[in-house]
Length: 189
Image (cartoon, rainbow, N blue to C red; front, side, top):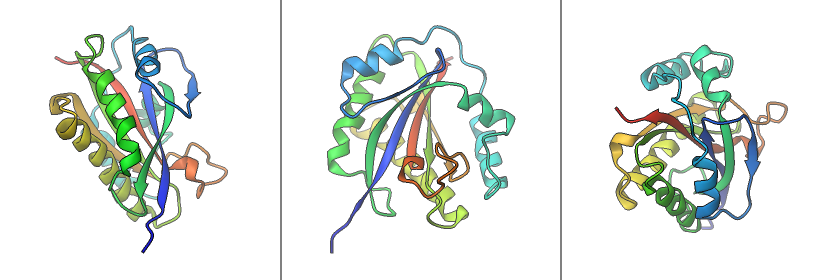
């Protein structure tokens, strides 16, 4: 049986000027240059409230909700991460990218920051299934970073948005909507 990978975009959201950069080939210098632009404290984000709002708004969207809207204003660098079809298994070829992200999170300039991993999906399944899958994929990235790559779990949080916050709202089933974001939540306390 052949397992087809789904293209997943991993968006590294920052706290700097609003811009979105797309990269086919990602390297540690590129990640550090982008993540190193963090210069101000992040607005307070209540991760438990984000989870609650996502679960309460299945099929209704989250982008316009005040807490989710804060996240949409942050700058992003989008790279590809592949998962096995309808699965949380990260494709082996994507571990290099996850490793580069981990290297950046271990860098002294970023070592004091915490990050939110937000999972997204396209609208190819039911809204409830997509929300659950996006949460599990965000958790899979969290687990890979904290176990395989030894990023302190105290610095990582995860939430699923499902199909509720598409990057391409005109094409909800587009693969571009399947992504994971890493958002800088500011300094550890």
